[in-house]
Length: 165
Image (tube, rainbow, N blue to C red; front, side, top):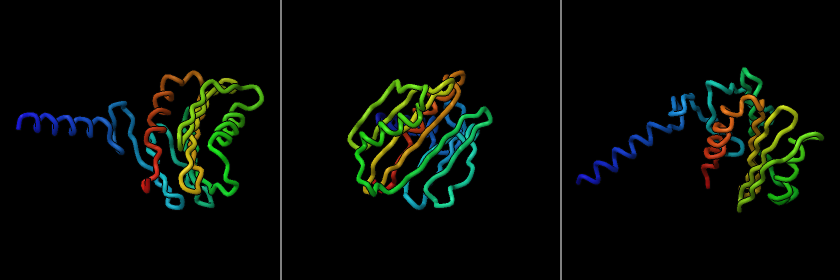
């Protein structure tokens, strides 16, 4: 019985330390954005990134911070049957621009991550293929704010999901 009590205590502590919404252990107030059209969800630090409203076609939303950071979350149908490798490579090239460079790229079965720098900006993107959809998030922020946003990028990626999966 004693081990059961410890297990329940551990579960409670973890649930309180990392809620989907509300004040988290990292000091940010996290909320959830759910896209009705494509069925994905994303948690985001509402005290830092402010939603700008869904796009007219309902594919996603842009979030902007007072310090200039921008989070974009979106989805589209994969009508050309593109590979994850090609989508991640194109995303990295687009975000790096002419003078930037990709510094990290990871591919897994259904998702890929690419990050790098462009000028004085850091970019981080996660792309996933779910059924016939391409879903993505892109975060851009000043290098001077990397101490804040690197941790946020990790949590954004971890909570970017599709509830049907």
